[in-house]
Amino acid sequence: FERLVDALNPVRSTGRHPLFQTSLTWNDTTGHALSTLGGLPGLEVRPEPVDTGTAKFDLSLVFEELRTEDGAPAGLQGALTYSTDLYTHDTAVSLTARLLRVLDAALADPDRPVARIEVTDAAERARLMAAAAGAGAGEATAGATTLVEWFEWRVGCAPDAVAVCCGEVVLSYAELNARANCLARLLVAAGAGPERLVAVCLPRSVDLVVALLAVVKSGAGYVPVDPA
Image 1 (cartoon, one colour):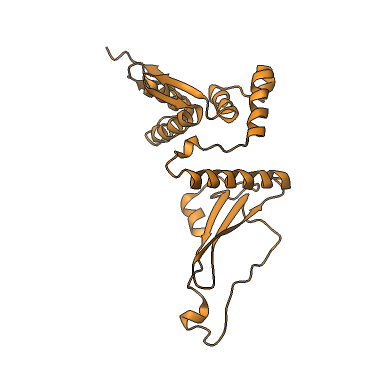
Image 2 (cartoon, helix red, strand yellow; image 1 turned 60 degrees about the vertical axis):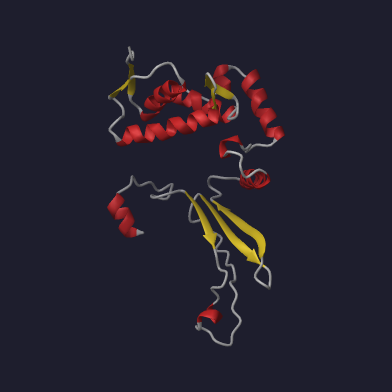
């Protein structure tokens, strides 16, 4: 850990882990008991969870595969550890409920794109839509002042609503956001950022909207160029 921090030299803060804030761990202990490896012959060995009472990261989700006595799959069990300085118990419960909702939907329809899976339940969606429709702009956007903040707020309110369409190509707010974020990362890696300009030479299309949004997300300014 110390070697990674020294090599990456991240911006340090006393309020968060310097490398990452969320961890997802998969524990596959099937067939790896010490007794089967010859380390403790003649003894029956099983893991015993120990609760330290502290959280190493902001959020830590641990999954473990369950097996029957004959080795057949018996599902998964999981545990979520969270920092009480950042999250309440109700928030942690809602996060796990959303994860279970996504997993249930994925199992019910494995061919469904992840972007089309509902994270919120019907009641929460209704509250979000009502807030978006009934609140004033200043109140509803919770202090958003930049184009990116306004757009991210809209994505959170209605991720599955149609954001842009051109011909037969239709993107929801969540899909548009995902594409723009991917392109923005590539632009930043290529040197885009504040005080920099990026030429955009595309015809009227969904890709044009993705490109313009990505440039703004990178912190640079876009310069539209007429393809003709």
